[in-house]
Image (cartoon, rainbow, N blue to C red; front, side, top):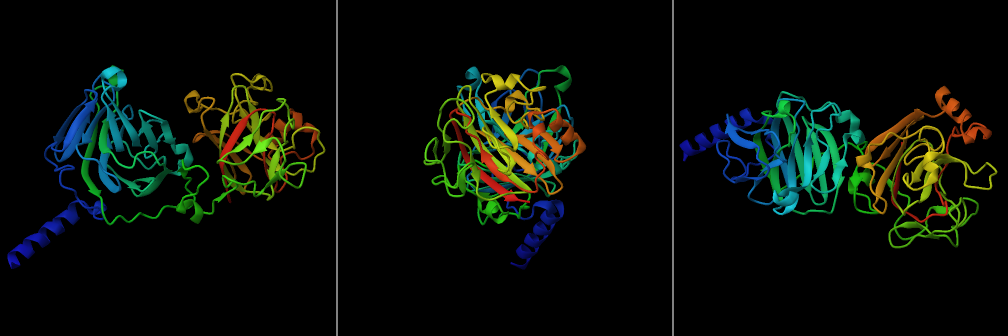
Length: 457
């Protein structure tokens, strides 16, 4: 018995010495034994996987589709840790979580789909972000947490941690917190190691390495996550426990008009808006400003804040989200404030007016155009996520579906120069008030809002 205890003690000491960074996770038999690919299978593409020196090594193959080495077993709640290395910034990889396989996808070549921990060594540095492979595209681009962009190091092993607990997925690289997504899609599925498709000869033959793979499936204890990291929450009109603890508050509860009133009245408009069934719904009217129920504003006022909202447009629709609305200006149209433009760029004529596209979707209306990649614009009839951050130092940022599309300094000489050549030049100190209401615009077109939430900074 004494010899057995001694041997066990030596084994534990050696394990702690070899992999000190992952001692909190327990090894699950069958995930990776360090010697063979037992318990794994290749799906979709033709990239090569083999075991070398205790690591799974994937090698890119020219003109292959995305290839995945996936577990035979499915996993629900877990904490997954491993060390991974990618040898070239020309390559791309990822770790699939709670994922699935459609053998008929990609014209019969097979398709893996599900949430992926992204390994992206390119210039944009989005490693640790969360991508929905084969389905919804990017869920958490790293523009949402730019401080983590330098966490991943090309050409050396990086320690990654993935927590999938309940509806929440969180990621870390080298102990740096990266991404947080709350999503009700997929309660379980396989884990997979991706070798990305390549189409250029210079990208072929590049390797990605995975070793020290450990998974814990019981007695899960979430690691603390900083309050200032934005949460992408796909549960409409709900806040996660982490969001509540971080100071986020819902401005729309999904059922009532609490906290809102008409911009020109003390109560909520009696017509033109519906606020039941999970959406703030602007009803169609004459297609002009204030032609229906009129704009609505928050009863509270805000100075420095982080505002997030989802919106859905009908074809040709126009609306907006305004901030620093003081209601002190006398106007026959919509109330005055800096506007995050909400617009169908392809069908509404306003997109072609203004200067250099400064009246298009997500722009600071008539001031600063948004720089948005086409792939991050959701189609008309789908939900898009807008975000406006006003920092205490008056730095302002607009986001669309997780990508930063513009930034400026409120009250700066550059800002005032833009105001001077805009339609807002007639308003003294436009956009420079200490605080203001947040406004949802009635422009006479049918538009929906939901998940409107704010955190004071």
